[in-house]
Length: 299
Ligand code: HMG
Ligand code: MG
Image: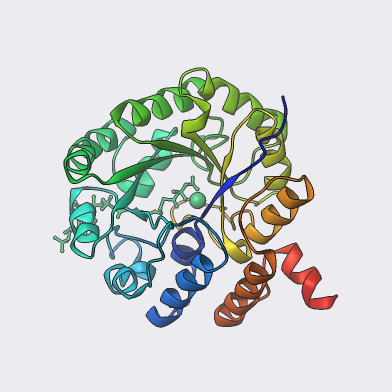
């Protein structure tokens, strides 16, 4: 199959990236990060997360962050919500797109949200209902699609079932997450193919963590299947605090470099993105996880 001519990147650095930082990042820096990212041409920037601050203290300032960003017309700013309480907090500061999240592995979902998969879907029902009435768009995540740190192998049928359920509930897009980055290209392709048999491809996105260095290869295999929405995090930040062994996401800079090299449009200014990644690694006080940003720094 031909590669897509255009890919929409969902930048998850301000959420997936910063939720996994051990040091507290100042609120002003989080706001600046979102604003710098939206200035690069990215059309979707996941801004923060309204989960329980007891579970993820790193993003306890979600309301201040969301209220502080300069929202650009044409840019979507989804925020993570685990339940109705999170939805209400997000709405109180004007969020108009949210993301709910569950997993294909019950063992992981219990550690991450203190609920089994079906219980989490029940929790989302009132969120989806309220969102429908409020005209709020809802994205859905399925975690552990290619392996679970607690359960091990994850049957494809479980991934398909959960993705189908989120789509049927009203999620306009379902992001398939390799939370611990253990997947390889043929497995990623087979997983996507199985889900796409039940959920239309335009409603699917992919979300690869790069723990084993497979993320770009996995993305390419999935692009060949026709997916055209890819999640990534600037500077390769990220990971889930409740997924043992999870490390950073695919770096957005590296994704953009590959896509542009393949002649696929993203609308993103790579130079501005690299500057943002370099700035963020300065804020975090450690080397960037992006090969492209590293290469540009020494070029
Ligand atoms: P729980 O402890 O079972 O919840 O947690 P609860 O309803 O019993 O509430 C306990 C306390 O939390 C109460 O406060 C609630 O008010 C409060 P208390 O009465 O003790 O003072 N609370 C909240 N406060 C603010 N906002 C809320 C909220 N909800 C409850 N929304 C819960 C259940 C789901 C809340 C918790 O487990 C949680 O927040 N988990 C989030 C974990 C998380 O954020 N993980 C990372 C994101 S997922 C991810 O990274 C994967 C992804 O990137 C894709 C991939 O890579 O695969 C998306
Ligand atoms: Mg993730």
